[in-house]
Image (cartoon, rainbow, N blue to C red; front, side, top):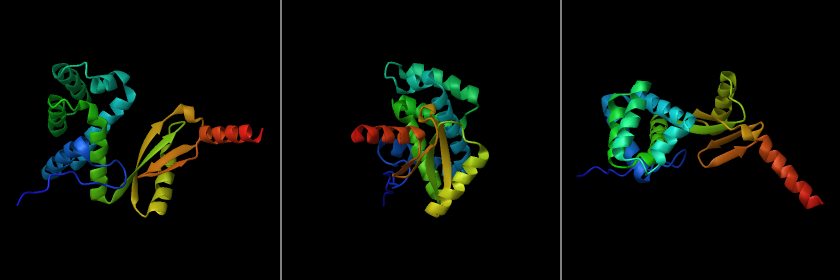
Amino acid sequence: MSKDRRAPHVSSDHPVSGVAGRYATALFELADAEGALDAVAGDLERISAMLNESSDLVRLVRSPIFSAEDQTKAFGAVLEKAGISGLVKNFIGLVIRNRRLFGLSDMIGAYTTLLARKRGEMTADVVSAHPLQAAQVESLKAALKSATGRDVRINTKVDASLLGGLIVTVGSRMVDSSLRTKLNSLKIAMKEAS
C-alpha cells in the first residue's frame, strides 16, 4: 500500500498545496523524522527575514535570469553567513537544482502552516505602521487566542504607508483597522456626499 504523498490542504494560514506544498511537506517529514522541526523552522524564519530585508536576495530568488549555478553560489554564501546548514541547506540546494527557488517564500509559509497545525496553533499575519513592542505582540496573541480558541503564532511586518493601526489576517479572515483605510473610506464618503 503506497503512502499518499500529496500535500494536505489546510484551510487556514497558507494553503499547503501545489509545488510549494509538496516541497514543504517533504521538508517537514524529514525534519520530523530527524526531530529537527524547531531547528528547521528557526532556519526558515531567518531566511524569510533575510528575504524581507534584502531586495537583492529577492531578485536572486525570483529572477529566471540567474542560472542554478549562480543561485547555488550566491545562496550558499548567504546560508553560510547566516549559519544555516544541514537539512535546510540541503533543501535549498534541491530547490535550486530543480529551478523552484522562486517558490521559496510559499514553501516557507507552507512549512510554517504544517508546523502550526501539528502544534494546534494558528498563524496570524500582522502588518503595522511601526514595529510592535513585545507587550503589544503578547496582548495581540491573547486577544486572538480568545477569539479563535487556539494558540496563535504572530508574523509581523512593517508597512509605513498604513500611517497607523493594524491589518491582521488569520486564515481567510482579515481585519483592517489601519489609518490609511479609514482615511480612504472617509475620502470616498465625502466624495459621495458632495
